[in-house]
Image (cartoon, rainbow, N blue to C red):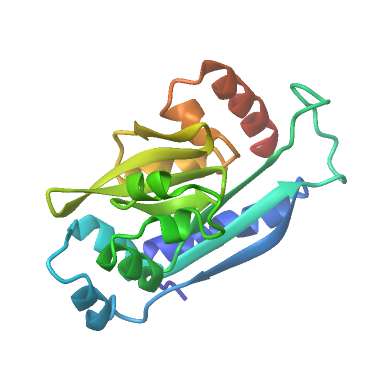
Length: 212
């Protein structure tokens, strides 16, 4: 039974991965709202202006946790056999957690739940709220500016000296469309939106094997 386009797309994508024999899926879970985002959660945001297209995403799927790794049962060819780890995923926090972080100006509570960053770095994150993230590695975030949260995503890297911010210049829909095409391989954001030519070559190398 069709639930909504995004839910169906996720289900089809995961089924395709499972049936490919090329990957293992240690975690796959997503949940949808029966009708609409509960009004109580929207009200929690108070005066925050969340882009309608962002709410539309959460009307379709409350949260996503998908992680996959390469299967030893498939004869993978590696660009660099010593260092390459073929894996990917999409982790979107549930709308309750996102609404709480926005209402409290505390994006760091999701981006850095183990408090590995210092107080200044946490302060720098107060207006960034994750849409897709891996703790300690990266977060693809919405940014609040002048009290509004637009449907434009930013790449946040907390893994180096300080926290680095890079506007991606894409909406949620564009992010998902490109991500599905790249199988959400680790580092695909830097490859497709961040100008990392070397990583783009690597992503294309593995996408060909995943899609064969």
